[in-house]
Length: 378
Image (cartoon, rainbow, N blue to C red):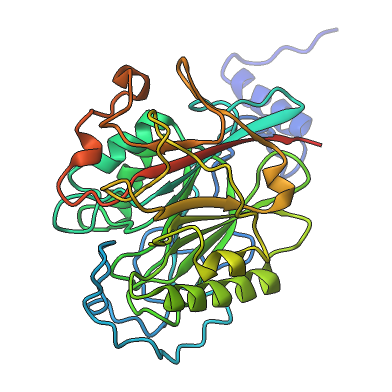
């Protein structure tokens, strides 16, 4: 016979049965969080202490106000040849490395990766203009944009206030928001590297011959088993002997740091008056200095403003040199690389947004140099 309960008791009994069913102290399980947001763009710094936002002087004895070398044939203070700064180890603690966000190195610009090989366009760029030894006027930025480099070895790497946000804005304009960069700190006219590929280590080696910049280097993770090490340099105008001393010191640093099995590129403003200078013989220990050399649309290879001297270079080791291919921009082909002079480049539409007048801007003392390589991914 079924028991009957007062309607007033039924809700209380229902609550009691539910408590027994759940067991003492148990609560319903929360659903798993399957939507955790993974930040794929975390910067990877393989051994350096990276401060992406601050311009901290890592402690090197740098006098930002002296030894200004604007790339002219006049050096304002030729007395600083005996700096005793110990340059033997890279200074990383206060450097500015910005990894940006991760990107497929073969997806931006004209970089190409077909699964077997990757095309890499290297550029030397001392393309500042105006009176400030900086990229504020925009001529050099447009020139870099126009040729779509994958890695830039850049000199006089200043822009607006030089804050982290200003430098990031410049790099984004040159190469896109997925790019990476390294800029030495504590220097009046710093060297640096901009890259579509991840920079996994970076630093600077002290140039004992000058006080307002050093040698900036970066180890770059390109597709394949080998890394690419690039060094951005700005040698002195003072004399060929001083430039050879700088080359001798740089070769020593490279031999101590860069594995022989990896690729190497040295690029930038060498301020060399001829290709027979002693520094090229010195550099032969680590890179291939032989021609043929890049030229402009008219076949000229000089890179100073007057186009009479070989100031600027992209030099690579023999392992990488074997993979050099023509530099192709639009319908134009430069078999040995390009000297970028927008004043003679035709059609100018191939290097948009660059203008014909950009290479002739006030205080534009150098031309860009571009070489292209197709490296195996295996």
